[in-house]
Length: 287
Image (cartoon, rainbow, N blue to C red; front, side, top):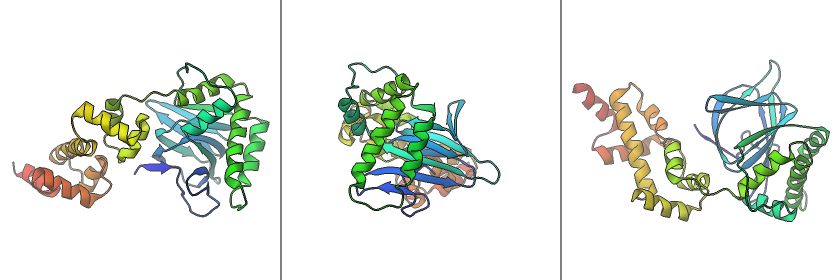
């Protein structure tokens, strides 16, 4: 199952700071370690309060432990937590979008005409000022007050300024500038990389750096087909192959091909192939 951040995990105002239209921060508490794939819907600054956060990219693993923080661009990541016996994993996550970064860089005269390449994530050691910031920020959870949204926006500016005042300034500035100068990614790369992830068209558009309308237009030009139709055809063809050449259950095949709604998968599979997934398997077994 693909999780999407920012989301509320345990429920209640202790876990999330948000307005009607924006999610500003999330507090995460976990007592069991597990590996999971997350779609981080906004750029994220993660403070590890206790335990270790591990980011798995290709064949490499990057670890942020208590006393470190991690900056991550919007995207899909495979993550896990390491939890020492008798303790919990705790983290504070702050969220920010492209528009916030653009305004921040412009306000503090940090814009550039050419952004240097920057990685999708950074692991940064904390310091006394950043430790004080996260402790003070945690006190806003569960609070109701006037102008809270404005305060939280100012707090986000504060932490970015603190990061830029530290020894990692060059890397952090390049990271932020690369967000504002990020060009739309190749649509074929994005679609094929995430073809079997249960992503909506809106989420694929966001990952590609496009508006939904631009994504649909560019997709039509690239594939001469509407996005939903083409993606479903590719997923169903892969599902048909798995049913014929594996012992996986129908639900496993559906989930593995990006269909979270099993009845919907069965219905469109029958529309495409004239038989249900189970009958497709049985027909192949007879042959």
